[in-house]
Every structure is written in C-alpha cells, then in structure tokens.
Amino acid sequence: MAQLAFLVHGLLAGRAGGQDLSVIQARLLGVLRDRTPTMNELARLLGLDKSSVTGLVDRAERRGLVTRAASARDRRSTQVVLTAAGRDLVSAAAAGFDADVTALLAQLSAADRDQLAAIVSRLLVAHAAAHGVDLFADVIPPGSPDGR
Amino acid sequence: MAQLAFLVHGLLAGRAGGQDLSVIQARLLGVLRDRTPTMNELARLLGLDKSSVTGLVDRAERRGLVTRAASARDRRSTQVVLTAAGRDLVSAAAAGFDADVTALLAQLSAADRDQLAAIVSRLLVAHAAAHGVDLFADVIPPGSPDGR
DNA sequence: TATTGTTATACTCTATAACTATA
DNA sequence: TATAGTTATAGAGTATAACAATA
Image (cartoon, rainbow over all chains, first blue to last red; front, side, top):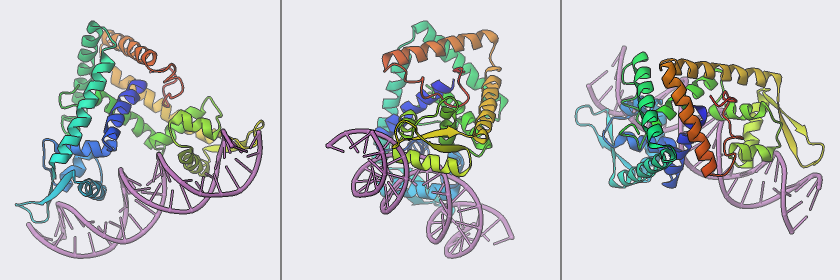
C-alpha cells in the first residue's frame, strides 16, 4: 500500500512539476478550480496556518496564477481567485495526471481494474464513515474531481 | 486512487511526525535500516542531489539518529550508519504505520482485503516490469519491508 | 582528469508570534 | 474584544555552482 501511495504521489508530483508547480501549489490551484475562498478558508482547506497561505498565495500571485479580490461583505477578508493562466496550468497538470493513472491501470485486466475501483471505493467510504464525515470532500487533490 | 494515495501518505506522515520526523527523514532512516550506504548512494536511493543529502544527514546526525563513518576502501567516501536511537525511532514509526494500514484494511471484508492485496501486487509488478527493473526494491518507504 | 563530499547561496514551504485593520 | 490577514523571524528541505581532497 505504501509503495502504491508513493507511486501515485510521484505521478502527481511529476505532472505538477511539469508545469513548474510544487504539489502544494498544484493543490492550491486545484482547490480554486471550483471555489473562491477567503485566505482563512484556504488555510482550513489546505490544512495550513494562515501565514503559510499568505506566502503560498503571494508566490502564485507573483506568477499570475491567482489574484486577490476584496470581499464585499467583510472588509477584513480577501478572496482568492484563479486566473485564466492558473486555470490552464492546473488543467494541464490534471489531464496529465489522469492520463498517468489511466496508463497505470491499463496494465491490469479489465476485471482487475473494476474490482480495484470497487474495493478502493468501499475502502474510502468506510474510512470516511469511521472518521468525520466529508473528510475528503474538501481536500480533493488536483486531477481527481471524479475520485479517479 | 489519488484519494487513497493521499490517505496512506497522510498515515505515514502522521506516524513519522509522532516521532518528530518529516517524511524525508523517516525515509532516510528507513533506507538505513538494512544498509550503510555512502552519501552518493544515499542521494541515488532517495532521489536527491548530493548537497541535499549533506543537509539531511547533518540534521539527523545532530539529533543522534545517524553517524558518519569513514569508508575503508575509498578515503573520499563517507558511510552513513543508523544509531541505536535512530533504529528505535524508525521502528516505532514503522510499527505505528503498519498498525494504521492494518486498521484501515480491517474495514474491508476478508475477501476484499485478499483481492486488494493481490491486485495491488500485480499492479506494482507490472509497473516495475514496464519501467526499469527494481524501481522499488531500493525505495521502500519505512514501515513496508513486506510491501504492505 | 574524474569523483566524493561539503560549502555558499537562493528559493520554497512551514510555523509561531506580533502587528494592523476591521468587526 | 475578537477575527482576518500580513509581517518578522526561524528552520527544514531542495537545487545549482564552486570548491577541496582523493582517486
């Protein structure tokens, strides 16, 4: 299991790196694909301290991948928004990662592939049920909106 | 697959962190459990630049987890050796990780567990065969000498 | 000349603590 | 007072380039 985890993690890191992104930068952009959270929410989503998020967003903004926008409702808050360039980058990384996983699974028989998908799905559901509810709903790594 | 990879990776990071180890420090100690490689070999095993390994070993040595020993055959070389304290630490982390994986898999039926083990094993073998030979033999994360 | 390891340097990533502005 | 975000600071982890010692 650990070997598999390292392998898949390595595929992700490789595809992120192909776009000159670290894994955490890729996760940041991935989270922003369907949300415009505040800095605080981003810290919770990524499991980081808010000061870490400041630096993370600073570097992404410097590269033109995200922008900060003033919040309308609370003048203390800042919303982080993905730019078109950022969206292109994360989409390319996600597509590559999906292709990698597909290629990896292609080495199994169709029956094995189906079995694996079913068992892994049961495992994740059981784990989510055993621990808090949506442990995963908000921490989806880029390239896996469909759970693949 | 990505969710599972993140989950297992998180278990590993948590158990390493429980011993005040980063994942890379845990991998360093894990690699040293059955080897006394040179700095150069360590760089290859961990996939890092040799200058990165210098810093990694410096910090581990400062904590008394590893020692540097002059190589007998080549006076340019340094061999890195796990101390008793380092061995205790990595063993504790490995045992905890194994327990976590066992607990995770316990949520599946025995039949699913067997199926999963068989399929993952086939997947890793197929991947290793498709890419260079022992891609994994030398990059075993701590806690998984048995591939579990 | 080539190789082993370290050093100098620079950057990313992370956290804690102190601070500013707003609520 | 409490919260949102930034800044100051410190440290781990990483790489590139230059270096010393040895082969």
